Image 1 (cartoon, one colour):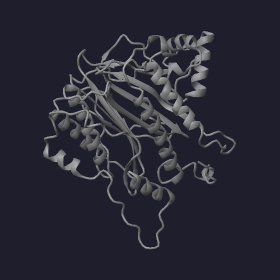
Image 2 (cartoon, one colour; image 1 turned 45 degrees about the vertical axis):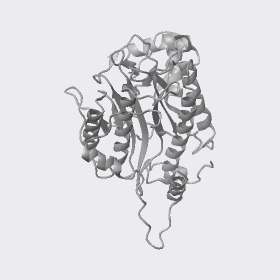
Image 3 (tube, helix red, strand yellow; image 1 turned 120 degrees about the vertical axis):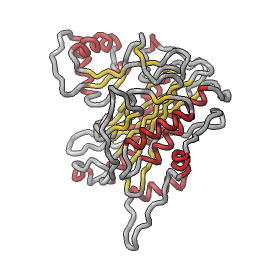
Image 4 (cartoon, one colour; image 1 turned 45 degrees about the horizontal axis):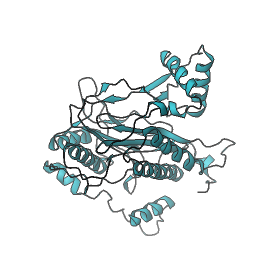
Length: 390
């Protein structure tokens, strides 16, 4: 992909009204799709989780490294991992991205969630997908929770439209979860994405509780959202685990001069390589530096932690995540893979009439025809070509 000559002039416009921004989101999305597909292909019996996490991260690093290598105003365009590859099994909710020596291998029949994101110039493409290891047809509670999450994702795709509200999506999740005898997992938020911001203030909550609510808002043109659906066969409540937490994000507003050399070395690397977006301790070049540095950095609140939480043993958790762009031609899904509904077959289905009507709508509404003499911009032409390929 060639660099765009007008980039420096339009840098201030950081939303989708700038075609170059849209292209960067699409490019990041394409890379995440490729990395996610490769990692999912590797989710076989006896595959090592840490090795698969490394594979996902490596693909994202290598592929983003091929694009936008021309400096703008004598500055390199930042790109790379926006959320490290995490592979969480069965009742584990997410954020499992272990060191080599603390990893596990996948077993037949396990339900596996793969989650990752990358960025180009701070514009993020994120995705997650759930598969069952081993290739056997699944028709039990594992199928129920996968199809509950999938149908919620499909409804959300159709409801994230200009003028609709986040509350509509939260209510839809509740209705579909009930039909599949599952629960949305508490604490899960789908955030607006902005440049270098993976957790924007506008958010869709999976389920409201006494402790956690969000303000209602309407979706607007040229916004970007990461829709994150996490469903459970259990109570939908995450509990702490004994597992080491390895995913963190720098708290940019906090500064402190750390005491030990290794802690300072750790923070220096974080500030340089991951100043704003989440990273895994696996990515720190010296593992000993990571282990020592993280504890001191946490103590002084220099990092925000992504904890490894789990449901009760014996329960199953499924996740689907995708990125959407609210463009003039409609809402465009740029990441996320299809579910294999021939191998994951639930005896339950969507019963709510309102939700059935939403699901019956096309997720790719026909583009409004341009008035005579009005040319399509380059990005719209690319969009239509992509849709025709599908």
